Image 1 (cartoon, rainbow, N blue to C red):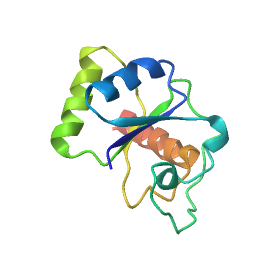
Image 2 (cartoon, rainbow, N blue to C red):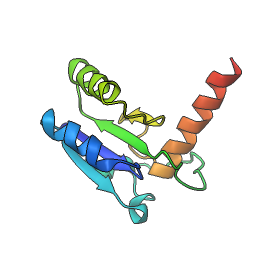
Image 3 (cartoon, one colour):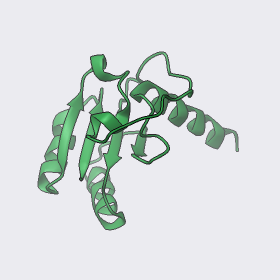
Image 4 (cartoon, rainbow, N blue to C red):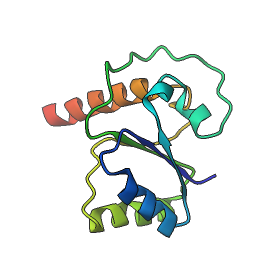
Length: 120
């Protein structure tokens, strides 16, 4: 199932517009849902609690979680975001590894990865 989950994005309308143009479902996730596993928010059953630390809060830029897109659809989505100059620094693809993480755990991991890239 193709779906975009939007977490605290400053311009949800623009991202929802792109999703609609590409016939991808989208959902704006409220802060009250940030402690629910992202796989469950995407509509999948999750089973394992995660021991990944959580971020204290969602970054002001928000986060985009991409669910179920194949490579060509993902490329089209990212190209359209670039074309419209929509900057979302924290983007992730839903995987079997991160499906049990909450949004705050996922963004913690994304921030940690960004810091590692800056160091190298």
